[in-house]
Image (cartoon, rainbow, N blue to C red; front, side, top):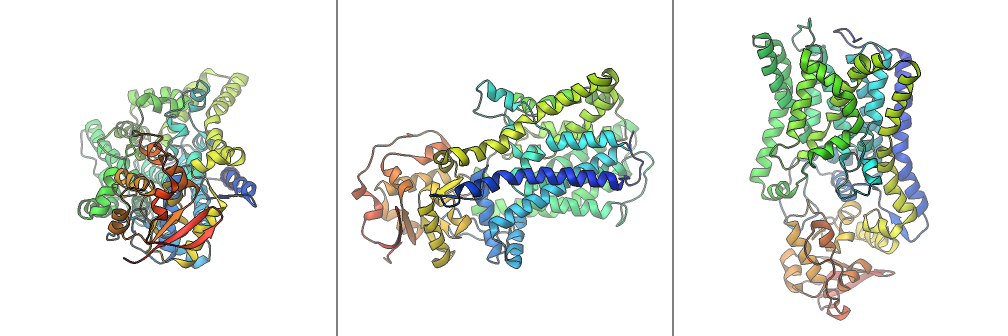
Amino acid sequence: MRATSGEPLVSSQERGWVILISGILVTLTLVPYALAYWVTEGTQWQFMGILTNTLDGASYLAKIGQGYRGDWLFHIPFTPEQHNGAAAFLFYLALGHLARLTGLSPVLMFHLARMVFSFFMLLSIYQLGATVWSKTRPRRLFFGLCALGSGLGWLVMLFGVRNPLPPDLNVPEAFPLYSAYINPHFPFAIGLLALMMSVLIRVFRPGFDQQPDWFNGGFALLLMTVALTIVLPQAVVVPVVTLAAYLVARAIKTRRFPFHELRWSLLVWIGVVPFASYYLALIRYNWAFAIWNEQNVTLSPPVWHWLIGYGLLLVTAIPGIHRAVTMFEQDGDQLMLTWLIVGALMLYAPFNMQRRLSVGLILVIVYFAVRALEDFWFERLKGMRRKAALLALYVLILPSNVIALALPAGMVLGEPERAVDAHQLLSRDYWNAILWLHDRVPPDALVLASPDVAIFIPAWSGQRVVYAHPFETLNAVDRCGEVIRWYRGEECDELLADYDVDYVIFGPQEAAILDGRNPCVSLYGGGDAELPPVSGDESCAWRAGLAQVAEFGSVAIYEVEPR
């Protein structure tokens, strides 16, 4: 049933099948973006390049923009405070350098990288399946369930439960196709984890006693670990802990110290240590990144949300998990069962980015699901019953992915006002103002704008802003409140002087703050969603010290005169 201890054999026919299906799936993730660009062309709206997870998407574009301008040290652009740069987010900085060399725009490089690494992820998933199984059927089952797999969040939505949404509709890094729709670094990380698993499963098999070297997977494992630590540092935590737990389990099982497994595990730990040391020093000694890390909180949802999120895949896997627990075989099951237990427990580790630890967990769940299908379910379901059950499984795991891909695009196509609130669209007047900033204002300038507008400025024109992002603006809650109070006519002199603001934008989004809208409430909760309206004459945008330098329909740009 499984491949031999050597490299998996994949026929040219299999490769062609995988390349075709992978190409189709990756292309499907591009269609909603193409539709969004097409439907907004020539209208009063400008599509801003990101459909889902838009605030973080804007931050990725800003990072690519810094690399495009030649930077290798990252500075947080969504905050007014000056601070030392750091060798962080090197993946996106590198994409920016590549964009400059190729003449591509940052947003085009973002989506090109998203497609390339999504394709890489799907090929890597098949490679993992080919390493485990020698027959084509389980390989394709593994690939299909991983690539298309999702949960029962769509069913929960039918019953009206939408806040919060289950992980299959809200945690893209946990699901391959969903991650392929969001950004390039999630699928890249999943693909690297799949390849790491394929190497570890192969070298931990009975009878494999080679020490790691350049040609048998040792160097590749080290290289993949380094790449994963750069691309998504949180994703390497579970493999590091899993290998330590696996060594303990092997020692207990065999009553001897597993020196062979230790040599291979050391490659992962060696690849992690220098980067982990740097990241820890960064958040300890660089005050700006310390604050950023403190407020960058993405905790796991409740356990029952994960059960819904993995849904039928997890149910299908139960016989395979049970068999692994009772037999605890060395050929794959020991490592994958340890990975599953560690991964599940780590989702609730005392760590402020618990959700990120879900990256790659679906690979382990589907491994046991395919084991269960081949060794348990198919033995009990024959002929048409087997085909019907398998078809039903695929039908029931697909809807959440369809919703995750289609729903955000649906707002752009049919509800542009809601799409503006979701940071997918911006009015053409604001877009022209951003283009003016891009062409005439240096990137070290500081711009004050409504949070709904400011989020796009570092991403598209390159300047810093006073407030824009709930994680990447330092002391974000206080800063958002300061922006609101400034536009309402409070604390004007203090804000402009304290942060040395260079330009101020005033348009419909800022006027809405005067009318009583409080955008901070939707970001942080609490406070008053509606504030008392303020007369336009009391707004800071009309006070002395501001000189209008540009106007685009309903949007004006003011320069702060020297004081």
